[in-house]
Image (cartoon, rainbow over all chains, first blue to last red; front, side, top):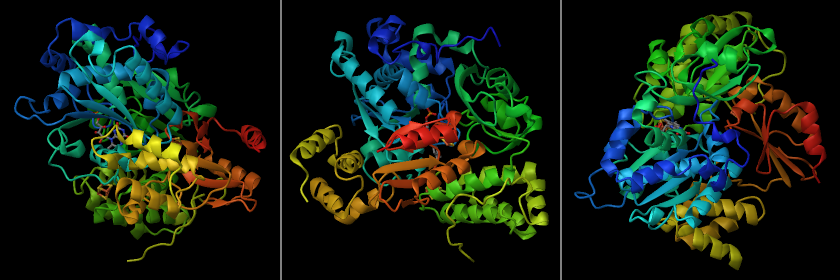
Length: 442
Length: 156
Ligand SMILES: Cc1cc2nc3c(=O)[nH]c(=O)nc-3n(C[C@H](O)[C@H](O)[C@H](O)COP(=O)(O)O)c2cc1C
Ligand code: SF4
Ligand code: FES
């Protein structure tokens, strides 16, 4: 993988990469200058982002330029316009936005400014998960520096373009990463996702037109404007251009956040960047893109990491966060840990999700502890099919149900083995550390 | 309870970021928790309700939704160990056991001397540096038993 072209993490490797001085010395704010002073119209900026084929890095892979074009025409709709940058990063396994926020915050600020120009926004809010204290402080400091340099606020770079960027701190709830949950939370309420339609471009923050984008998506924008859509398309695949940040964790020798071109085979990322499976062991299973994407068997590890290829094997690219399980890991245990997570994080508005996540958690726990029955295994499937797809207000129910179905499809034999033996065949001793909650019974 | 003047001024300033003052509630609760004793007491909720023109129960509804807000007094040091998938795969259970043993605090509770609170957390976005815990708002990553001992041993 020697000839890989990188750009996302290049600056992060420099000392004081988070400061304006280093950012500027390495081409920072050049794209903004080109846009504002080079006579680019807002429509041209959107066209360039569209032409680049950039797809959202927050999980759904929606084309960013297309999303921007959904914002209503201000000539016909004079309401206040916002963007919310999604820095809630809470999908288990995902740890990439944190690197950008902490090490290269000006890249995000510049991206926000270009997005604001293109969508003719009044203000941008960056919603950072509350636990990310240092990343939050770094981005706030970058905004302050940029403001002092005339890059944020009124008359950016002496032009008539003005834009405010505000930081906002969340308080630790996964559901606030869902775009409408995020908006409710930003308004000071519980993070209850809203039914859609109406979509955010029509009715977003405080009922005004709003676009929600992930940190890494926005971070790509200055590179696209600076180097051009054609350059961007020279990386990655036809349907998924560009590089992405791959957080790889679990049972690997060198876990980390690596920059790779979309379409790079998962095995290559595992072996060449993450140093292979740790302790000389074999791979048993892996998640391609965060916990919501479902466990895959080791036999599928040659699949290219891009949206279409991963969809082709019945999973999802998600956040591109690979989680690796070696031969000693228990897939039932992994399913139980995640079922517990979704049970904990369900906001409770939809009965299928509120009840379903609770049942999935309890059944997986029962099976993992050796108390499960064959009927439990069938019930997992019935429950999961009742929860998804698209049966609830938001996709959290799908995120809980789809991995359950994937575990049943690829690793049913491990569930059966737990039931037949009456214990976990992989346990090294000790029950789950989770405080046992009272079980519900039908 | 009334907010100390400096904090009140800061909260006023914070609300100017938003077209609707109420959007300042969650950042305000953070500042209150940081400045006023480490947890959101009923008195803080009442003061916030007054400040934002809400009912106390509305403030409670928001505060209780978010795991970062503590609704009970905590120990002097709060240790939150991540027990989600990437950390679980790299020994989060052992970390939890070790931390509980060293501090004397049970999972979800305080140590008898009131010095520690230990809790388990969902994914903290540090998965590539698992296992990890958050100690009083700072992440400690790539934990080993020796590293945990060194960190906890250095606390007063
Ligand atoms: C339950 C749930 C949690 C989510 N969490 C995040 C998150 O933490 N960060 C993120 O960027 N997107 C998250 N998303 C996806 C967002 O809803 C949204 O699609 C994304 O922020 C859009 O940005 P993008 O188009 O730039 O990817 C989540 C979605 C769901 C259903
Ligand atoms: S699917 Fe679950 S998390 Fe999403 S709105 Fe419904 S109850 Fe809440
Ligand atoms: S799983 Fe522990 S930090 Fe992500």
